Length: 219
Image (cartoon, rainbow, N blue to C red; front, side, top):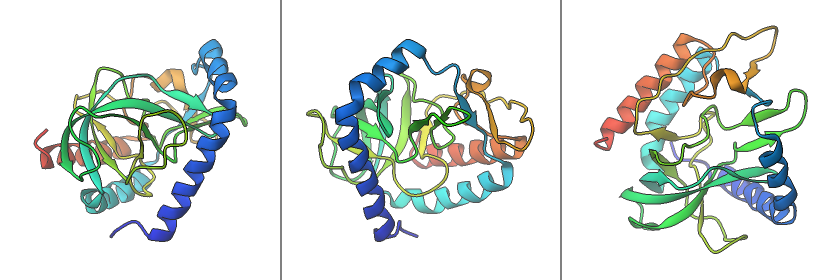
């Protein structure tokens, strides 16, 4: 099943609006993160039943992404009002013609933002920040309009709950106990994770999906 055109247009418009706002607020927003860090933020863990459903969707939909690549991460997250992006380099192109090996571009996602409500939270589509120096298998939409800077900008593909970026290395994931009626836990408790799952069923579903996708592309 392909991403519906209406959703794709809406997502692109939302990202474009975020970039426009970010062009105005980028400096103050980035300065706040650099001075305060993200250790005091919370992050949500995805429950097993939701993870299992979403992982099945990813296996069905991600191979249809317009651009499928192995990338290396060149920078930490750069924040702007309404979102964030990371500078990456294309290493291997499995599908699509918009990028070639060696191209450097910005990667973003509609899920990637910080919220300052209670609790202040990192929103990443249940995956951690991409780690500089590591390589990832990513599934991308067509390029967004270049609204800031000289580098092209690509968004992660689709409307799954989990952002479709998978580290080529094996990273151990742990579960932080959830208290009360919230899915949020302190980011510091799970900051070494690649994926944020609320229970073993979630971790297993995501790990199996990651393995299948990496094997699909010979990784």
